[in-house]
Amino acid sequence: MPATFSSYFLPVLLLVGSNVFMTLAWYGHLKFTDRPIWTVIAVSWGIAFFEYCLQVPANRLGHVVYSAPQLKGLQEVITLVVFAGFSVWYLGEPLKWNHVAGFVLIVVAAFLIFLD
Image 1 (spheres, one colour):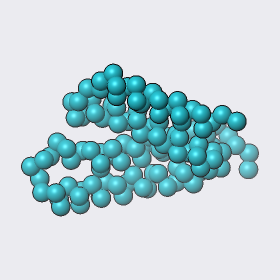
Image 2: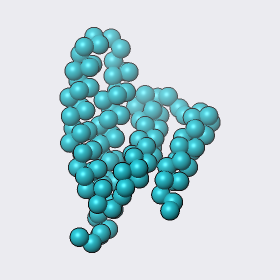
Image 3: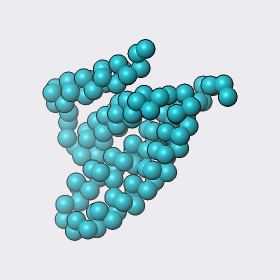
Image 4: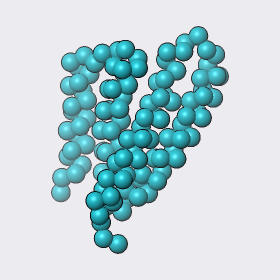
């Protein structure tokens, strides 16, 4: 089956959606510290279900055109971008220079995965 634009783009789009759910499941509860831990765990698991509903197809479809290490590299970069926005917008925690520098180094590492 020949690779098309959607073969490259759809997995990335699904990974973005997946990461929105993942970030919400992993960090969204930080604004609800008054809730019992078992409640936030249950809610997080429910949110994570939707993350997996996007992440598994993203990797299945993406593996047609990307290697597993490339998919993981994409995942990490997308995770950083989504998390950075979430941290600033939802949690109200601005990114400092060292956070940005660390994220940039991870992006460079992910870029290296795509080199032949």
